[in-house]
Length: 302
Image 1 (cartoon, rainbow, N blue to C red):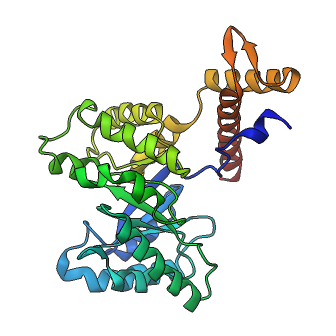
Image 2: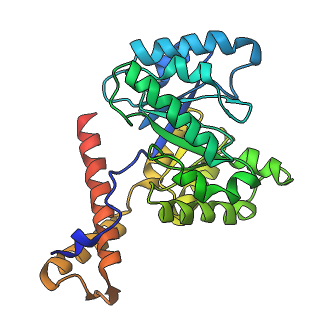
């Protein structure tokens, strides 16, 4: 058996960019679907005023059903309602064309499990494959953070946890977050809990300062180094920076290819160019090469 067959992290590569579009603006949603993001998140929550929720729900339902370009995954962020998630939102958007749901302000495993049960019934009623709608619970509070492990395990639908920096900072009483350090522990916790639960790497929330592309680049590179797998965006101009930041550098790819070549020749354990290599490092090198190859395929298809 080869070293790679021992790897416990052979999940398919998840999305790296998630572009938000307000659910109350149908033209903006349609434009977002063609903007080049790995996935688009149609929003029924924060970007939609309370008086426009019903109209936005109908608009998002139409976009999911009618305007999804081939190859552009569609996610929807639904509203919280009481101790769970909005039944009317779920009823409107769980239909063919939906890949995943963003579940905001996740604080309990029970709410995730209840949403999963309801979505399962909707999948059966509407001819979707069981379990096809994936979950992205968003950690936005101290209570959510301390329950992150149970939230991550609450449903087999959960693809990844998302970190909501702005709401988290407000919840714990931080002033406006201008430094990465105050939320470092929270982000690292999500990386560890995600790995322990066997789900995908966490997704970082959106960088809200649209005029600070250098800050976005630095921020995205930092979360990548922590172990995050993707980041949200609120404007198409942010996408190229996010995509570039999550791609392997030429040096990373060269090292990964050398490690894989040595593992094929020597069994995967030993020293490669002065670095001790064990099966875990070989598995990580395989992910780097896989990510680079995916980027090349996507670039050729554009």
